[in-house]
Image (cartoon, rainbow, N blue to C red):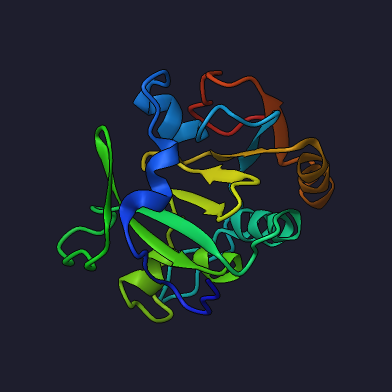
Length: 190
């Protein structure tokens, strides 16, 4: 699969690996699956908004750009976006991934375009930026997770080499965590 734009995934099957009976849904939504050797929490950094748009999520973009180098399938990836991320707008027609309390719509594309999955899927040009709630490459080398209610940090589960690259790319914005550690409720020093 080589996709240059965000489009609905062929089916929800690509996201089934996220659904685990041994993982609480809140941990899954906030941290992704537990199967990675390293979990990093990365602080959001917002680009100052222009009058017509919200701030862009710079650290999320930088993390995905870095992570694209740590997969064998950078042009074949998936993003799951909460079906209710915008109030009032009808959701695109896409396969649904039924995470408890967080039904997601599943999209596919290259890692580089999935950082804008919500805006592209809802066809909002230049308007509102929002983070995708999960992004992972087809080879599942890593998984970025950002719960619907996240305001401070997002999580990347990955291998040691990708974690070291993220720490180098985002100095002062990353911290290693154990799976299941609580999320901070406000910004503080890392």
